[in-house]
Length: 75
Image (cartoon, rainbow, N blue to C red; front, side, top):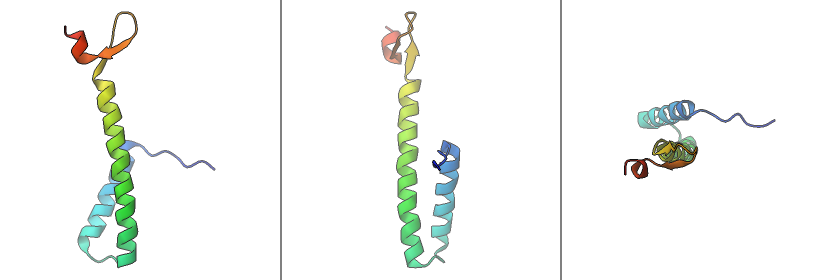
């Protein structure tokens, strides 16, 4: 069964839950390490999503239907 791809918001909620849990300090070392590693992966996924969104938002559609950089359109 394929793993469901989580939305940006779901990944962010998971990361926030991990941070909150680790901040309490009541987590056994082994679990803290596992959760930290999971948090790092979630952080990387969120960063990639934001970078892709930023690149998409920085483009506009030209009259020809081509995507062009937003700055190029302003000229």
